[in-house]
Amino acid sequence: MNVSSRRFANAVVVHVAGRLDQDTCEAFRGQLVGFVEAAAHDGGAIVLDLSSLEYVSSAGLRCFMLASRQAKAQRGRIFVAALQPMVAEIFQISHFNLVFQVFPTVREAIAAVSSDASDAFEKA
Amino acid sequence: MRVRFWGTRGSIPVALTTADIRDKLAQALVQASGRSFASFEEAHAFASSELDFSLTHTFGGHTPCVELDLPGDQYYVCDMGSGARPFGVHVLARQARRPATINIFMSHVHWDHIMGFPFLGPAYVPGTKIRIHGVHDVLEQAFRLQQSPPCFPVTFDQLGASIEFVKLEADKTYELNGLKVTPHLQLHGGDSYGYRFEYEGKSVVYSTDSEHKLENRTEAEAFANFFKNADVVIFDAMYALAEAISVKADWGHSSNIVGVELCQMARAKHLVLFHHEPANNDATLEGLLKEARRFEELTRGDHVLKVSAAYDGLEIDL
Image (tube, rainbow over all chains, first blue to last red; front, side, top):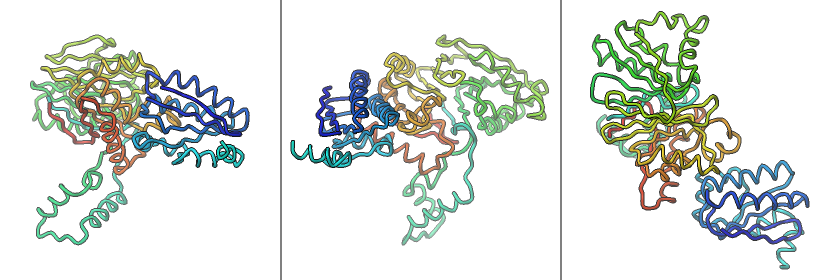
């Protein structure tokens, strides 16, 4: 699994690629904690770009849930964007679509963060 | 071996209401709109083959009680939820005045798992032998307590049956008339124990009131081993996954999705969703079943897992 990030004003887009399951969730969780802390510190939000996420298991979904709790506690926000069809279906089946704001594209998620973030994304 | 479900609901018994029945009838009439039926049989065939399960059935309302029907004249049953009352009626009818021998295996002693015992008819019949097996030290205390004044008019000592408590140890295999039984510790308030039953090459796992911490690989592997190649796994699927790991985390229950994942790891053959949330109606429970089946399809490797939802009256032959 590969994780990379890019900042657009007060939005941090975290790109997650590969499979997020019991084997990879702990490392991912460690990385995500740092991103959420940084975003909350700036009064911003995390956008999880899941366009390259091939599969997510219950253990992986739990990482998202813990990150969401952490963000709420620190007054930050997490948005989810660009789910592949299989991952989108798993979000529905597990009722995670009721817990997270899910956007069809990263562009739309960034627009929901702030106009500054949106401007920065369009200029990039 | 036949597995017979007498009680499948978690926490507290529920019953269909008048409004529920009217809703089912109205939805059935809408689905049949434009159709005409010349006879009761035709209408019955339509209801059986074309209407959703949630319209033609109910998942039922009794709390946990699951019988393993084996050859021989003894009875084997897991938990004494309110389903123990109809189970007792069944035993009395089958015994036709002959005293029965009933072997009970207790997951734990929370109220929904013991509340049926004071209504177990055979317990009042002299000559009946009841052996209550369990791992908890407080097993006998809990059964006696719920029949102590002022909670119930008949005390435990007034029951006609001969009742024996049999203390088991976790992860130790016992044999009882050819039935192998292994209890296994589960995560639940005050602890609970799942049971793996094996009889003549067939295996059934009864695993209710059990929460699974998803990030713990050792725990998952231990359960996959407990469920390994089981013909049937009866699994605590009280919540959808998002509920189970958010607002209801640490409540001691699990989800349909985790049931699929553990059974896939274990290469079990048939997952039966169990211990239904009392707040969920039949349509919601059918939705959770469909979601579990779809998740199994999406994540299937070379092993096909059958997924069902338990309901009061369900029988599974092995």
